[in-house]
Length: 123
Image (cartoon, rainbow, N blue to C red; front, side, top):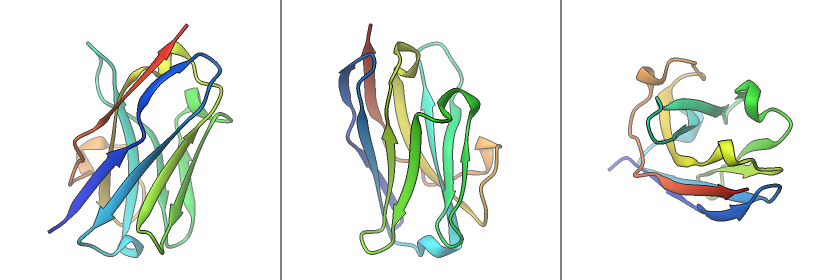
């Protein structure tokens, strides 16, 4: 069974850091891109970052460049999103999902969404 399970969310003060993990099972990470998305109340879900583990290609939306880092650990089948210098605007539910092939900026091309993990950044 294909599964993506997020963890690591929580409450942090502005300027602080959190590390999110996406544990993947039931498929070969080398064949897929894995993206991190977020959805704040009343807003559309947006793609935050993506990684294609087989070649290391990464993508970041402009608002997180220089603050967030995505990485993959093939041995653990885990995709990690390290979030530093966090801002209240980063508050959202964060999800991971997979896409066959490389990263895409079209969230509708991603499948197997996890249940999400809540991130709250206080000012």
